Length: 406
Image (cartoon, rainbow, N blue to C red; front, side, top):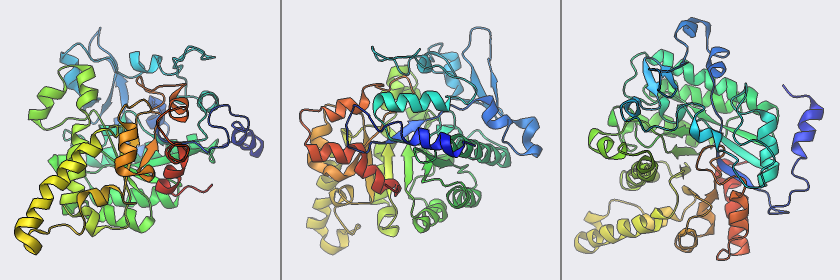
């Protein structure tokens, strides 16, 4: 735990920041890097022998986490010979690759990413608050290959406890998101409650492609949704490299770059499920954030949703009415938030269609495609965004989404 003096030092590090001065910048989607210590030190004693560990399947292979006999990320990459994002490999070496960066890019030490390095990089980039998501457990808690569900739930609890300690060093500036095993929805619901009421988490995370190919409008998930609505926290749908349905899997994993380009597809489907599956009507006070899929696709699909729903109303009248509002009205409401990539060409269009209040800034730090140290600057100096839009995207919208105290 940090001393009071350390916490004060960390909280003042952005007092003289050069990027977006006078604007509170909230990174709505940053990441930590799990290590073996994350689990070995924090997992409950009865699961020690089955603790997740790093493995190298063969001599020239990258390193993967082994959780309940499953290689994470997806082991399909083993047979392609093209997977560059194994633990601690190519991708993380290039985090912080700005031309004027004052330190070696992507150094990783005992805590996955040292607290001092993160706070220094936050000051370099101009980020005041980071909301933190995992890396390995982005999809690792929902794999359909798991068999020992009590173990996977224990792995999630270990991660949540580790992250609470990690963030305690600078609790005003580092906020955490709960990870759960969705195979056991009752256990997941209890864990979210614990994470919020005892550990101070500000959101719960799930992947858009879920156990046993359940869709997000499946009543199976309702207990989790009800609890998050009661706790007044958002559910964050974050992309992951978990296994997709077989027909999509064959396409997505042909090339690593294609994987990241197409990883938005489950988000598009998820948005349709939330709207047309009645989830947003059933849980009107529950906030959702769709993260790391960009925002440029949203205007197109919202227009498509409207365009295909309106004829049903025109033809069948009240009998064709399955929603309380038009899809576009949900997209512009406080129920939905979308993260943007700082350099998206379609960002001004998304602001025009969705409104300034719907989009949040996300750095993706320290992953390989992050724009560090320039992600805040790219938005702050954007020639086509108004001053009001910049301030809301960089911080104000995330404050509302996560209900963060100013």
